[in-house]
Length: 130
Image (cartoon, rainbow, N blue to C red; front, side, top):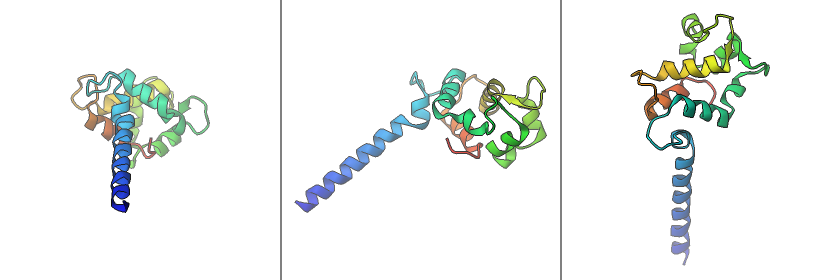
């Protein structure tokens, strides 16, 4: 009886893990199940996880250079990366500038979508776990 109960508990825990794996991260972000993320799916992921808001410490709707530096891995804290995202050159990043630029930065093959590995790389480049 104990062996059966233990086996059942293991099966249930594996099922729970499998269910969790299909509802978070890339699978959850890929709304149309086509194995790539469009810009809109990427933006929706950030909406669902409050990603941009986590970085916007002063809640003013944009990222200062300091907020940006705290949000990204040290590799991306350079003037070149920040300036490349700051399309209107006002020394801050709107939500649109950040998401569009970050998406574009990790669309390695420039096909207009992110593969699972490109998406994961974009999240790994952030210093905050989403």
